[in-house]
Image (cartoon, rainbow, N blue to C red; front, top):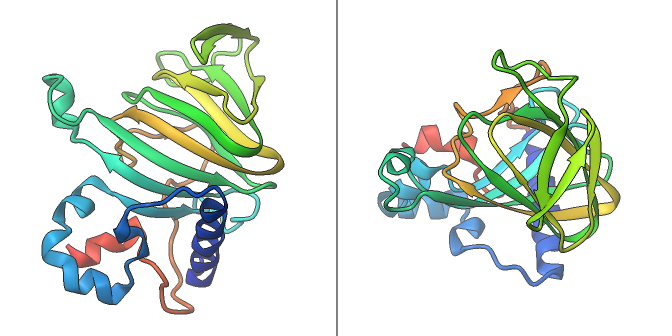
Length: 227
């Protein structure tokens, strides 16, 4: 994915969030120079993978298969065993109309996906079996704003602004925007994008980056060099 595409995606997200008067933490606006100046104070940001996360899922078609995410907070998986400390995470996701997030599920994470505003968020849902394969014969049961919903395998659930759905481990989901870009909120247990994403499609979670221009903002994929 070209750095110019990443810069453009972040600029688009910043403008959309400004329209909703949704403010991100100060480090969301840090330049590379700011990161260099604050490296000593940013160790927890780097450890937790907070910040901008732009991905085309390794397919080079960001306008069709891609997402813009910002991880606002994230705990430590070690806390899940004790139930103490920060056992939660929060993300902001911008789904542009025409984009799709590929079908995937999580081994550990339970998440609430919330349509905060914009168009309709459509989700395709299917349970997986013990081998991690799509279970084409199993009914999907989810809760939308605490109300039970039942769908056939690969049924489509549409969330209008203000609506949400709770997705449990093993429930595979793909999603896209209809009728305009969608501002999505995600509230979940601790998030680990490196080990807790299982895709039912041959894609990668993080993009390769071609630096055709300088970064306007660093993304989580840039943190390894900082560390």
